[in-house]
View 1 (tube, helix red, strand yellow):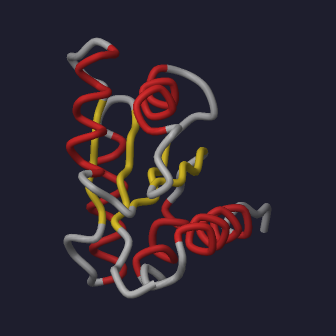
View 2 (cartoon, rainbow, N blue to C red):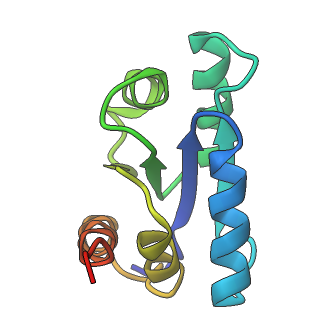
Length: 124
């Protein structure tokens, strides 16, 4: 894939902003991730925010929970899109990995990010 993927982080409250900020600070990569919050909006407005952040794609959309308003808005608006993949359970490890692998195919980038996020969860 020649076009770099965009990452869109969709979360409750200010979590998306915090995750994007932290990923940029750690990686030094800016502009690869966009934050979307559900604060102060209904589902229709949230869907519009998500669609605007994704644009024409290609994009991996990272959602905080595997259920709830953020995921429902993403799936309702983008589930039929061939240029968008959704990953739930977003964490900092997956976002940092993602920004360094945005030239992968959409499927590969989504799978890799999910794997990095899972590996980042440990009990030391």
